[in-house]
Length: 556
Image (cartoon, rainbow, N blue to C red; front, side, top):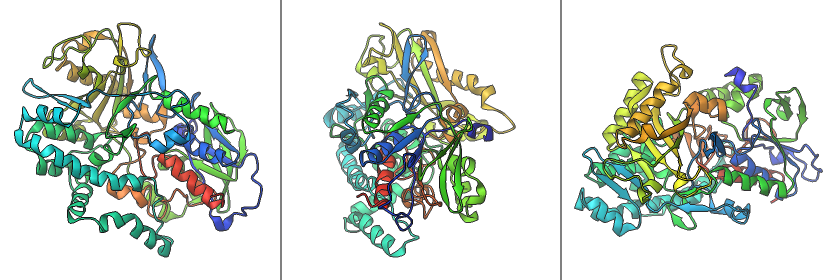
């Protein structure tokens, strides 16, 4: 890990208290340094530069984008290497950065999910409420009838939380202001119906299993919805508070269609390429191959950075778009941190149980439950291999005991079915997003020695449902939890930059007293997914952090 810290730079934010800043002082050229060019770092930089500040991004890799990039992983085959689907990108970020005007195009899935069942049948979700009800009624008429009410109740909670995502959490170190802010932010729930209050309680404190059991009786529909509760969550659907993660994944929208998911044409890198263009247009300096080795400090404030090549860079403010553990445990001298704060960061939990593969295919998967190699709508959806909540629970238990599950949870997307720029004619690329895989193997085992075996387990799992899958593979890319950390700076392979449990959300992300994007040193901010509102390609941590920086500089 220490060797890795000398090579890494991804995202960042920076901050200095308003009482410590002379707002009339002219900002120097090296005024704001952003550690890392991931999507939140780009968003933060854009808003700061648009306000007239001089901003420089320092990115470890030779391209910006962090985990939202498109790369060739096999000759002639390109794909979204890590982050692989879009929905959560906030409409205000799309609009403010002019992403559509810069060529970004997002294609909605014709249906949201295709889920093969244990008995050789399948469930399709999406394509409109009535169509989904007809599909669910094959398994339970009662469940089909309950769907509209389920959607309504979930959406009522999501609407409240959507507003919360664009609001800076209160800081309890400022009791009076925090009290007012807590009341204001909680008011939609406090003033709401008992129904809304009960749903909040169930979703924030309960398990996904208990929540879904209250609504539905059939395994396929519970599995289709329950999958969202384990995405990037190293936990069982029976785990306490797993219901919140289910909720987090319904926040998104595409062109006003709430809850919709889609493909970015050109891969996820098309999003960050457009963001990069927006940054350059407003004067952001972007330095790639510029790994940050150390954050420089003097007394109680930050003063600059040291790059891995030995170059020192001065900066009045620093915004860190990296995992909080990476920032505070690897880039800062621990002597600069108060023991109580250091303990909070030590206790911050990371590790999403995620394993990623990108696969080049000679032909489309031919599913036993829905035969055919010709392009069909289920090939364009999210293909979920996890037929029951019990299957998901066993995957987690297996991973805890053995390092990874014998029957992992797999979501497969085949973006080349809607974007022919990703693969040669007649060929395809598939993204395999897989759970559950222990962030660290026990008994002195190393992921480098077991990544291929785990990948084979994943391929076998898909082939059990689509027998032609293994033989159709031309090439593949393997990203174990360790690979995700090494390549993208995702500590413990955590795609969310920290567990998305209620005790690590809102004003407790990454720690109570530091949930408002401000670090423990003057001039230091955080702007990555380790801050509110958390993981996913939203752009909101970057936007919200920039807002607080500008407010401290009295520029808004």
